[in-house]
Length: 622
Image (tube, rainbow, N blue to C red; front, side):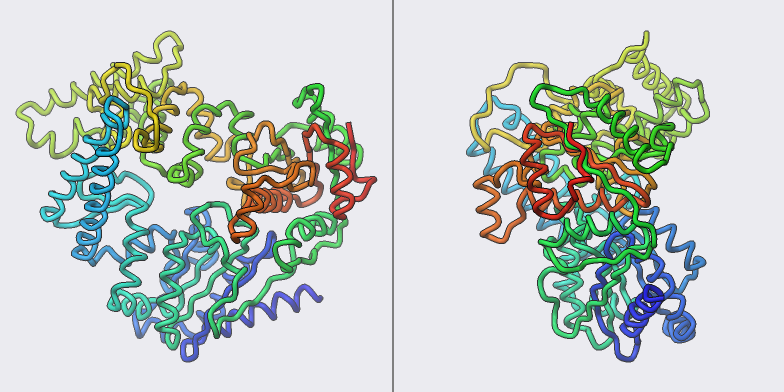
């Protein structure tokens, strides 16, 4: 009964903020398993009952921004596809907002390109001749100059939030978000358009929404609070991406903002809720209560790695032990019945067989988000063109091959066919390009990504993204060694390394980001839930770069960098690890096994008991 009252009270509080005559803005704390989407939908249905006529008369809508297309589709379905609600991803929303303002887009791009060119020219002036970067930079400058010169000739800029953005008139994802944030702050007219069209704007997963855009929305709200309600749904402990607003929910909100909280966890049993409360206790006091009567099971398995260990065998032992403890044989049935979650992507990459491709790109901040969600242009080149094409050729699906080539190949674009004196010859050229590419897989070969890229570039079968074009067009020769940052381009260097990977490795990576791999992480499973969860903690596999559970558990001291970052109010590796541990543990609906590989087993055990994270009978050392 208490849980029902709590839910109703929170929903009433949110509903009260959506008063069109007296709007209030709010940040809703919605921890793991709190039923956030259910509350969102129920409040909006209630809002619709009392305000639908008013919205329609004024041609207004309620805007709901979600993080993924899947979440977007789910909310649309629950709201019965009502046109009173505009439900979209952040990129779609941003583009629809700025799309009519073509002149502003052009001028913003002009400034950005000019700044990029100055930066590249300065780096070229300071850099060392003969390096890869020295050869690449003139091409980058030329490409940006060409784009800069073409701006005045572009009638209409284009953008596809879910697909191809390679034309001379197209914008990329980062440009759309950056320009939207810039124009919202600098153009009062755009603020008026936003608030008149959408008197209510709700942002789901706000902690992961681009910081620059959230900051811009705060500016809009502060200037139009008498007619505009901004609602942010989120939980700082579930922040995944580094470009989100890191202090959202931790620092005081502007005057007049409300902060309702959903304090009940509908997913996890009592013991799991107790653990995740302990995990977040040092961050904030947004602790939860379990809405479930079941106690559930939590066990910590500490594996000593000092003398080496067969991890696969040990994890089978863990499953067997959990089956005995819980009296649940599904722990030892097919692997599909339990979910193995790693704390960090490097671990999943190592176990999933795509480490050399993944690790090369993950270590570069500018590439990380596009790598994790699969949206970077260099990745979609392979995942949406090459991979489906080769899969179709492998099974002899000629219809699918034709569809892919018709959709993506410039060799048979409408413009190319119309200008050709012999259209059939263009079709034959495309077929020859496909056949030449497929030769790389002859006799069950597993070609490297760089060889695939160079072949596609040679035949022009597909348009190649700029960053990959630089690499594809390089001459095979020895380069001078880079001596300092002026001689390097981290993004191009990362792709240089990643492209040495085999095609089979890229396929494993695609399975991982599509959640078809049995190895998941915090990023791929946020919002999902599983009856039986095994969380694997292994600093050695994770490479200890951005995360360290040994530090979190007290087996290792914080580094000098951690201490400095903490003093300066910056995020530490312990902060990141705590968040990841929270998200993975909070997926469990019934039972949770945590496997900790360490060469300091006694320290780990002593510290987790002293911190009251686990009772002694819940710890199994081996």
